[in-house]
Image (cartoon, rainbow, N blue to C red):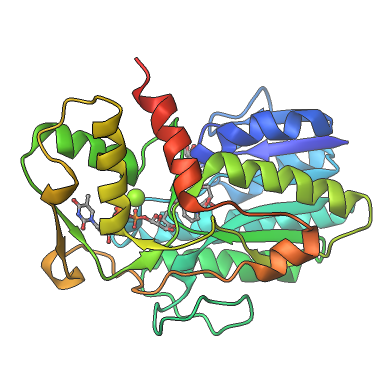
Length: 299
Ligand SMILES: NC(=O)C1=CN([C@@H]2O[C@H](COP(=O)(O)OP(=O)(O)OC[C@H]3O[C@@H](n4cnc5c(N)ncnc54)[C@H](OP(=O)(O)O)[C@@H]3O)[C@@H](O)[C@H]2O)C=CC1
Ligand SMILES: Cc1cn([C@H]2C[C@H](O)[C@@H](COP(=O)(O)OP(=O)(O)O[C@H]3O[C@@H](C)C(=O)[C@@H](O)[C@H]3O)O2)c(=O)[nH]c1=O
Ligand SMILES: [Mg+2]
């Protein structure tokens, strides 16, 4: 099996380099691409040409415009990267009969209610990022029936920037943190996502499973505040020298932490369809966060 990976230096892309390796030959491209192979998603024609010239069996796209607040003032770039380029790559893959694997987000939902979102629930993105990611899903689905779109939430990794690492830095610098406690979801490890992606590709290639859009997140739920307290508490236990402990992570409502982009209050994702279709288990969110912290804090 020949696999073409875009976004190979992101949180998920980096883990995919590892998890896809046993499936076959992996050509991993970051934004810079390789000789004659463009991989900058602000140039949709170039990335589609790359797909046609590599002729892979599977294209995995882990590249995305993920700066949620910045996207509010860079809507055109976010749309090219998150929607137009993935659509063009999926169409090029379709010409070859190749699979197209992609990631989307809880931010396609409006965050109403308290029930975990199911795949068929109505979307209603609140931000430019969410709207461009939803447009990407729609373009991919229209261009190539052989697609796998995994919607996930609150991604972290040992390598790369993420909320957990921001909380560690702030707890070293400040006596008090303020973190909102009315947005609910599940932190999900890039390593877990990469692993289940490899399993799902193998199933699809073997004729089992089913193409389509699936929700994939770690089990359980918390809030950004609960997540921050967990991270700070674990770091203290590991002997980190912090100015703020879990008790100094003050809970505040969203209204007390203004940001350019609106974010959903309810980011819970119902993952039962993915688990039953592919016969996989998604472990509790704390398990992966603990592991990432042990990796990150080890000196
Ligand atoms: N991070 C999260 O919390 C969540 C992410 N997702 C989705 O999961 C997927 C993976 O996200 P994650 O790994 O966390 O994201 P990261 O931000 O860690 O990685 C994204 C990668 O995309 C690359 N990229 C950005 N713009 C371009 C471009 N114009 N051309 C080529 N590459 C580009 C970045 O490269 P560079 O380093 O050069 O900028 C970076 O390596 C994305 O589809 C994202 O929308 C879904 C839910 C939550
Ligand atoms: C830094 C900080 C953030 N917050 C809030 C703001 C926000 O609502 C929440 C998380 O902040 P972040 O900026 O890390 O979150 P954000 O970048 O919006 O994270 C999102 O990224 C995209 C790519 C996704 O797809 C989503 O699933 C989600 O992971 O925490 C605080 O309350 N206090 C703080 O000190
Ligand atoms: Mg962010």
